[in-house]
Image (cartoon, rainbow, N blue to C red; front, side, top):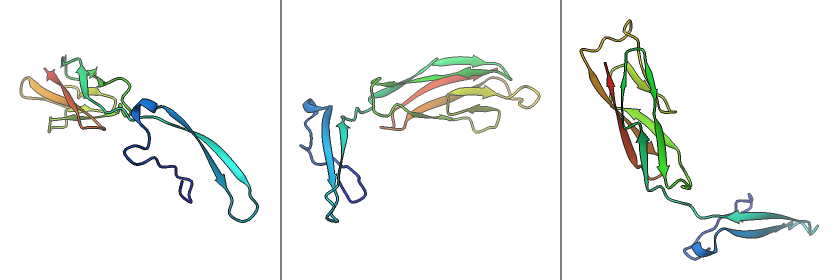
Length: 139
């Protein structure tokens, strides 16, 4: 524990994975001669690495002015960080994806694609950089 109260577990044998989760009692004592103490109970858990991600639906058709909600499922389900970042390979302004995975297409009054277009939407895990895609057909 440093002077700011930051508790750090380090070293290859700080805790063996088989011993986690582990509960540690931390006691701080003043150094001004008053001998005041305080304790905190800290639970140490192992980080679970991301091994993959899937996106559903894998394909979808969206009409002008429409939208579709995509869902990213990070594996394993108990991964420490299950967040993803959404992106699109479409360089125009007529198709967008927000950070919840909703793909939206502008209406015909604002977006006039030359025929059918295919857009690849990618979910990238914020931990490990794993990716999965969905192909959106706009017509």
